[in-house]
Image 1 (cartoon, helix red, strand yellow):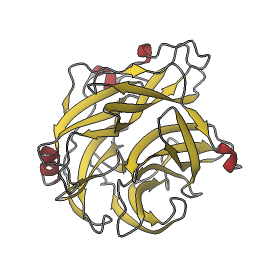
Image 2 (image 1 turned 90 degrees about the horizontal axis):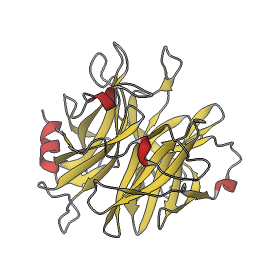
Image 3 (image 1 turned 180 degrees about the horizontal axis):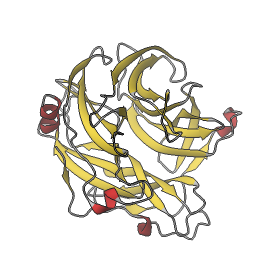
Image 4 (image 1 turned 135 degrees about the vertical axis):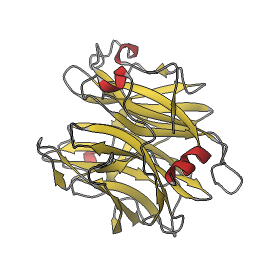
Amino acid sequence: MFIRSPQNPIISPRDIISSHPELIDVSAVFNPGAIQYDGKTILLLRVQNRGRETLLIKAQSEDGIKFVIEDIPVKITGLEKTNETIFHIYDARITYHDGVFYIMAAMDVVGKCLMGIFQTQDFNTCEFIGFTGNEDNRNGVLFPEKVNGKYAQLDRPNMKLLESGITTGNAICYSQSGDLLNWTEMKQVMEGRLHYWDEHIGAGPPPVKTEKGWLLIYHGIATHYQPIYQAGVVLLDLDEPWKVVSRGRYNVLEPREIWEQVGQVPNVVFPTGLIVSSFNEKGFANLSSEVKLYYGAADTHIGLATSTIKELIDDCFA
């Protein structure tokens, strides 16, 4: 289970103070990617202005709670590599891999959403590498190391049409690549559970390597009343991450605070950023490690909740 920070919400629209023409009087800030960089916690914020335009903004913190927010958007380069018309880039997930910071982000194009992959050295400029495919997709996350000699990712193909007209998915899938662009050998990892808290699902932050398996925090949507977005945990096999070791029965975070229940999309906690405090010499997260989870709340604010690796692994078996 997670415990909310008493400073929540740690970032709200009023905290975006800028004279940049696209950042005056923003409507929402949510769904941040998170990583440790140069001794600081870096967030890539999804910021939405009154034109419903989406921008990525860098924020940094010494303690992971109080953030200094840049007053200009992140510069995106390399988009000339594609002929697609790109409307929005959002919901960044950040992975450090072989000396490079990679970012996977949703990219709205004509008629669908594609997963794009970027690289950066400073989070002020992000270079577009390419799309991971041409099918409607979301919630892509890159593993922090190669699996069986290849890059590995989880994503959520959008194959389910809801009554509201929104296309979503109810399965998390695994695939691998030799070059980050051509992904093959897709395998289904798990599906949503009808009538429970996670009927529709998608990966949250990038998975964490533990001695018990890959620990993944994911979001689930209960749809049998009105949509309620929650967070849960699952443990995947270290060598064959498409195989589930154990999946938690209960959510570990759900919208209970007023700022999670009321906003431009009500009843949402959406996990996207994770900071793990310590790893052992073999690269496994220590069981006692504190975990900081950064999440979007009601598509309007950013919240912070904490737990430990041991508690979250235990939740996988509850």
